[in-house]
Image (cartoon, rainbow, N blue to C red; front, side, top):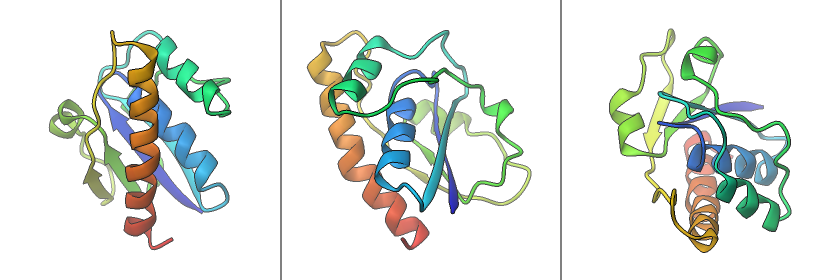
Length: 134
């Protein structure tokens, strides 16, 4: 089982959706976590609704600070926003990192969240498979 960290700034939308999608689509191969460099107080309602509309679980999702997971043994770190890439912390041990930015749908209609969800599913799942040789 490979451990993947999806890192964003607020850990309230894109990284949360990516965590759920990776755990669903690569179940048994990948254990995904998400975190933020400056976590928001809660997960965006649009992200929760977009995941629910795709039949994905949303229970227990909450923004986490990267400091809470930095000592975990990750096989891959994926930054999904430019700010997180710039602020990506130095991990205690070497870890492969890739940057795959996605549009931030905050403040936009639910359809934007659904488009971002589908974009993450299409591009991120394939990128993680490729990077980890799955």
